[in-house]
Image (cartoon, rainbow, N blue to C red):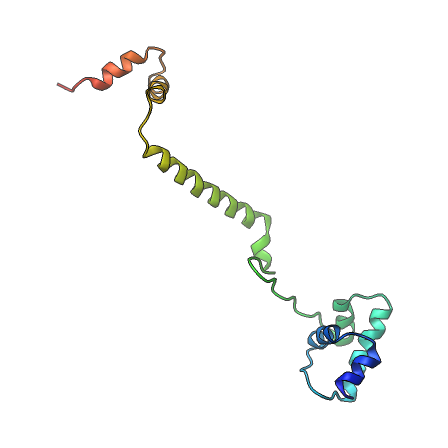
Length: 140
């Protein structure tokens, strides 16, 4: 049967026909033999009975169609979108951004207020002047 006749018989569009053909694993051709026409008509019957296309294909062929890889950044690989993998990637990205900000701040000179706060934290005292004297002293 010619492809155009088959599409008309099934009452579907060209794009649906391509999806069905790919799901059945049938190569595109000008004419289709009776056994392939039978597969297409069985798909149509299963869909009319309320099944979804992957389930109808599984019913007709005895196997589920392979899932397509999602375009772009993510794919259908099971481990790639598991919560543990996603969380690990988020933590790694956060750590990298924290380190970039840390080194950016480290390369800037400290203000007097920031230095006072640093020494208060370091010596645990409110008398920052003692810390400045200690810092300015020599080891002689």
